[in-house]
Image (cartoon, rainbow, N blue to C red; front, side, top):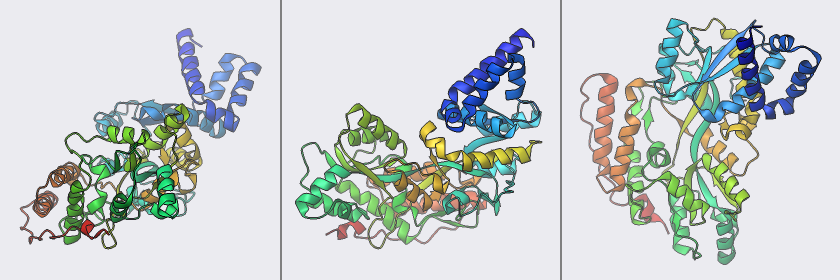
Length: 461
């Protein structure tokens, strides 16, 4: 073997093996590699470990996946005689880069990881082929409806659900246990099912000096606020792919957004200075009883506990409804594995994808902090089941290219609502704007919906 080429292969192999230690040790791959290295010469080891018969290229943009995917590649290679090359690429113009490499057929990915909201664009460009689920893995027995809808486009499953992000209600269990003792109940009785429950708790709570606020969350980010009106807003139907199903402006959505607006009088939060980082830090320092957070908070709590700076117990549950008459529903984004329609190795790519999202999903949280979409792979971590329950009922990010700006516009509407502007006016304007984009022509003005005189939260006892 040529010296430089030999060194490059050895270096790449060493990086893969080193990054994949937890996979190799768990699955016996390390012993296999060590045995090969000691029993054979190096020139014989490398071809045996890195077969050239079938090579799959996997693109991804999340640096946190680097070690996990390297380990998965080593183990899969040992078990299936298929070489998988994970390639970390820039997330900037990602899909365009996939398309360009595919058209030029230069180092193109056979499969790649992307978020579900890009699947219409990917599928229509021939970059996300309908999956070949020969083993029948992609079913409701393995995945929630949210996960399956996230990968469905016009009745076809055009990717494999891999891992997800959503938001949940995080609570300080220690504070609730203390409050329950004072109020003569149990901690579980104080876990809120509605926003009204939080307001009632705040009225009765004798907060310790360490607590600055009962409830605080990032009011500037749509991902943590959408649930107030989300159950009554329809952008593309269940799978987010149907332009005939658009319903943004209706009485329930107006009432939900008004309820969000009226919380400003209970929890004075400056929208302009609000930040997720500050909210999480406040929770970690014991200053909050409740907050809304994404799943990254689980690892941050674990780190704080290990460092001794978080001497509390905690929990995570699905997002609360507004009250007894208004339900909530949050957003989710699913990272998926798409098989490139330009690949000449679709069967092998699908086989690896099915193995990774099903057989390899149990290790993804330990290696990356990402929560797997597979139903029976919920990690044994406090709070993970709360996120899984919220994800199962969540609204997947829609796939339609024509509504891509909806989320930015909706975030602006929520910001204005928090600052006191008329919620009906904003939703009406947003609805007419989106309908004009979808239909391609001026949309007939919608009938005006009066803002309810009373906020649903005004009924809190």
